[in-house]
Each structure stands twice: as C-alpha cells, then as structure tokens.
Length: 157
Image 1 (spheres, rainbow, N blue to C red):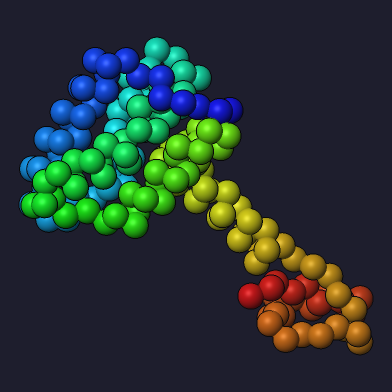
Image 2: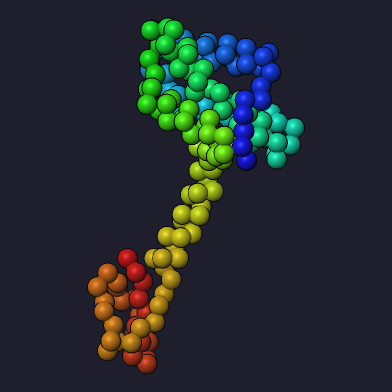
C-alpha cells in the first residue's frame, strides 16, 4: 500500500510541537525508536477500530523522522542518532513499501513472535523420532528410551 503525507496542517503542527517538546526535554540522547514506538502504540490504541489503527498510526509516523532531523539540526543541544533517523526516513517515506515498513518496524508483536519462536523450538527439540539403531548417527542426540524392537527414541539437542 503506497502512502504519502495525509496529515492536515493542524495535525502536523500538533505532531511537531509534541515531538519538539519530547526531544528538548530529553536529558540524554533522544531515543528515536522508543519515541516512534510509543507514538505508534498510542495512535493505534486510540483509533476507532482495530483495522484503522495501523493505517492511522502510519500516517503520522511517516513524517516523524523528517521532523526529527529538522528539529535536531535547528537545536544543537539535542542529541539523536542520525543514522537511525536516516534509515527510518528512507524506509518510512518509500511510496511503495512505507506503510508496511512502519507497521513492521513499530508494531508491538513481541509476544506473538515469542510464542511462535517457542513453538518452533519445541518442535525442533522435543519431537521424538524413531531411528534404526544399526544405521543411525547419534551425535547431537541423546537416548531417551530403548524400546524392544531395536529402535531408540531420540531428541535433538
């Protein structure tokens, strides 16, 4: 889905003020990704429907890296990681893949990924396989039981 800046002037001004206040109140180097993740989550949560959340958040977040650069350049007291901002700007402003990049980068899907990863690990490590004792290679495995018909149940490590 291609996106372009769909914010009104009033929305841009409000976003700029919020970003400026956040960047200037930061005592340490401004955490670019943390700010964008928090903003994404807040907009996503306040959207009318769950389907609208990512779209609304992406509309706002597309322009945030460009605003960050503008603010940081004009206020030398603000410390940010320009490489992180530049990378976000390049991916977020891509007219063909920007929407997906914003959602994939900022969506909080750590729980889903963790559960999926645990399932994969469980499948890989704890799925018993039967092998013929005479032809089996047993490195990286451990013997769990020895059934009566010369087959050994093994678990991969």
